Figure 1: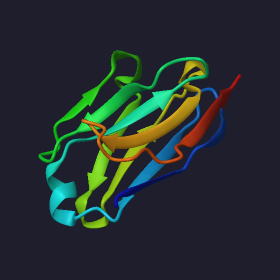
Figure 2 (figure 1 turned 90 degrees about the vertical axis):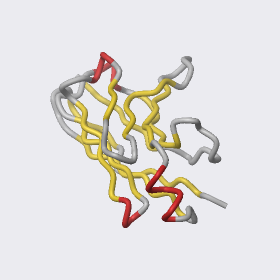
Figure 3 (figure 1 turned 45 degrees about the vertical axis):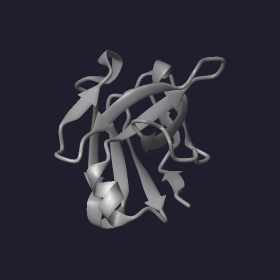
Figure 4 (figure 1 turned 60 degrees about the vertical axis):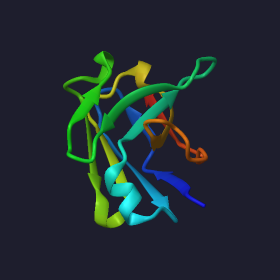
Length: 117
């Protein structure tokens, strides 16, 4: 069974940076390297939303609100996907989680990102 383990969140001032990591523990390396992985966030009282995704070939997608500020990347040898978050804004405050873009793996705990003024 695949276990998604996110880390790297924390409290940061507006304008600061964080780098999130997500390891798909237990996933077949063959499977991980071919699936499109994604980062999602869920702000208090709101539904989970896709923030960014990356295909097996490295093609990336970003929701408009994070374009130019966030960068998604992956290391298939480590079954890990990353999210570099720069120029953080108050509205980026949320729990961040990763999953396949079809979200069929069981969700992990996520990692809390809190941006303060």
